[in-house]
Image (cartoon, rainbow, N blue to C red; front, top):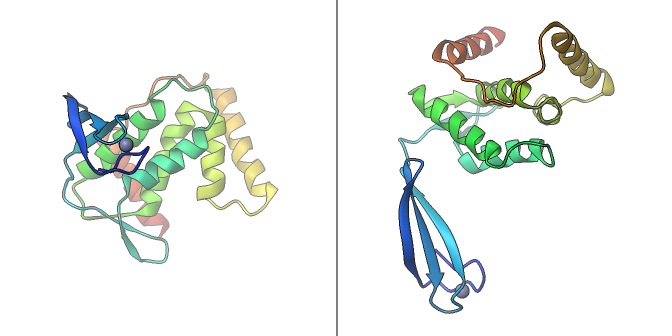
Length: 178
Ligand SMILES: [Zn+2]
């Protein structure tokens, strides 16, 4: 692990503790003395994502996190919400116990969660993921949200629990759409 400040590859561990099924290590660079943190986590059996063009790509937690983070940028969400969301979705994906998962299932999962978290983040994510090509498609999505909101109460700031049957439903609805 290179020092993020000077690039030196020698550091010493000054503190280490368990964190979210992994180990968090506080390190100090032996060259410039800067301190930084690394996380070590168990890599579960590899999971592949089936892209829209049928190509397979190894699942990337980093990609998932980047996508969600972009959508949630500058939204009034409590610190840690985005990381927790990405962690939870990743956990659900591995929990499915499949070797391959269509990218659309992951996208739908993210959409489902964002929808109950923050409408603006949801629309941002949807506009990239669903590849809205014109304002009409975007308007339709917003209208759907407004209708749903008129019917139901405001979304809570609590993360929804994605239950097993909910995931199965997502997976099924994806299969039937194909
Ligand atoms: Zn350094």
